[in-house]
Length: 431
DNA sequence: TATCCACAGGAAATCAGGGTGT
DNA sequence: ACACCCTGATTTCCTGTGGATA
Image 1 (cartoon, rainbow, N blue to C red):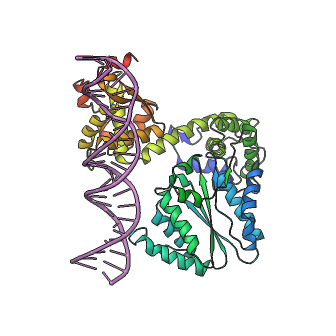
Image 2: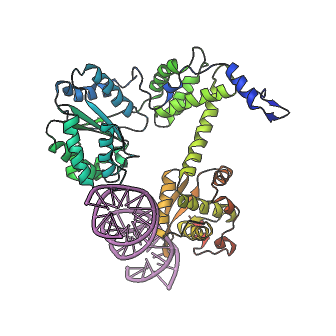
Image 3: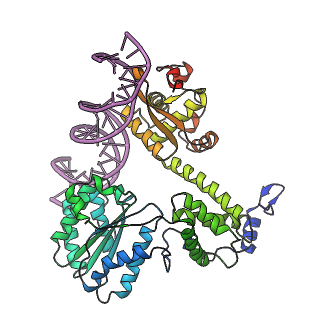
């Protein structure tokens, strides 16, 4: 980084902004690299587009398409493809434009809220409060609204990340019942799922409501990712800004992560931002490598900072045991005890049951912050052996950013002070 | 070989907090 | 004020279990 903004080592914000404005311009349209951007064309999604277009075409003649499900890993273009087709469809729909209602089930995840969300979207304002009313009242209201407002037309309900629904059986049941009870309006349900086995633990009625048909999105390979990046880059960046190899590096890195196009775009955007920040005229592969590191770090930082306080406390317990425990092997029982100690010290938290702690451990494992292996010690019972999966100093700096927890960073748990061992550590070491 | 530990993790119940209409 | 609603977090209750030990 050039230090023209600093004189005597002091950051000068005026200089910084002046330099920034006079500096090289890199982005022409940054939005083109955002996940929400719907591009003019979608490279390598022809098959998927064809299938979806085929399924939805009948809406142009006023018939309701049958419900279907889209499967595919994150970053395989499921949402983008649906949006793309919906835009095309709108171009060809003559009189009655179909309604498209997108529901992100990671945010709107309960039966009540789904119905309320649909209602509010159609009305265009928050008519239905986030809670308070009985669900069937909303159901009836929605029924009336759909027949009145979407009369003789079709309403596409896109349930994105449908696997994250809290009560998917009930939601799907409600939505099919909705469709059956309507007079003049028809609905079409489109589910989008990251999990291939999503339908497996659904009850049969709900399962059939999504139809037998499914569209599977293939993962992108590095070449395909490269094409996607090229087409986006031409919109997002000024000409000649990207140095040789930048795109192929982004593509290669993302290909390693299950061909995640979102990741590839993030990398490219971040690399551009890093170049811009350091006032380089061009984006180089070293910017991409830095971007990779930064994204990795940001991901963990954001995740941990966004966790509920109790979860942070559980993580703190793991941290403290590994910090003071001198190679002590961390087991779930220890975490429970240390968490209880900590919870008593932090205002506004209570101790939790073992059951709850066990859930938090699972969540941390799922997020990749820790690894947990089930292990039997025979006569000494069964437990989970836990390892931190994140750099200690990074974890320390993240935890120190959480105000309520910060004072505990150097707390030596009583468990460790007394060197209380319920299970002979040698049992573990034997393997 | 039967025993028994220290948990895992499913299902259902409970609680508190934010809301409604009457 | 009252009865009732929805949600998210948590507790309670429970059954299951790998394998060293007696």
